Image (tube, rainbow, N blue to C red; front, side, top):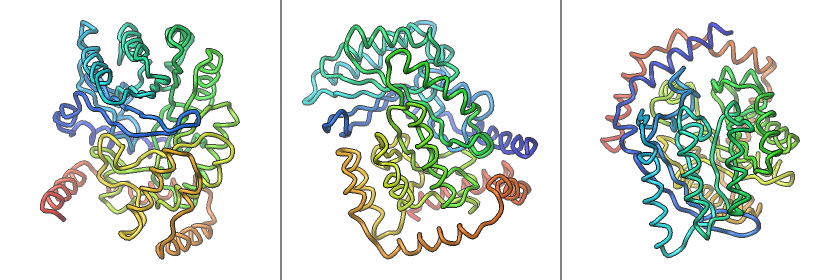
Length: 390
């Protein structure tokens, strides 16, 4: 299995290396505004992307996570931190003079905010302090892999919370509970035990923890994806995680997942599956739904869908849910395609082999059909078709 996985990693790394420089240049500073539920009310949430630094170290080492489209940065390692901080200062001024200042700010650097190789500790501190000083801000969310969540890296965050009374939330992309699936199907590169240690360290510092749970890694059936997501949410809450963001899979450029999709070996999840997961775990903790086309950056090539008649409406229901956390918004939709989804789930139930056996068989089945030349050809044909309005 390790040999098969290495082949996937090698191919994924090759795909990443072919991504054009403009992919990162288009993201120098980006900001997404929308409304979200926080502490019992709907607030303005600003998502600020800061890819003007090195990008994700995990991506550079092995291509990174198979589905991820947010890992590039600009490859810049500025000698003076002010180069990194300047965009934040500019955005801060915009917020202060805007019509409505945000209560919640998410700061993403297309990698691990707490990784000193990606973002210097000084820059981390200055960026968070600038945001915490905005009077309206009540919560700041960042992301990090668990290996960078240490007492030393968390101490400045604790100080910001104590000084400014701002809640600092740290998101970890655990994706799935199953270590085998996380390693082979997602290429995450860390274990459940590392995740547990990270959550424990966050709790001990009085900070807030967020776990990203991925709906439908490659090689899983729709039913398996649902069950894995449900069990992962439950396990995360048992570890003391404060909130879950269910990340509904979408297709992003220059990834192995995109190649599997172009090849016809992968379908993004049904929206019915996302609703099913949330309905089953809604009452055990705070659940958000990520992956919305209108809030996701960078924009995906293909988001989760049902059919032409209901997809837009269901995504709108999800937006209303994220703004209110009222479950009825997710129960306010029906469509004839739901029967098709139910039929697919029923067929999935007839699979007898274990998940691990099926994943190994599937990878063996397709490995000889995957290569970088074929990917680049399919990518070119798809891009031309899309530009022609297809």
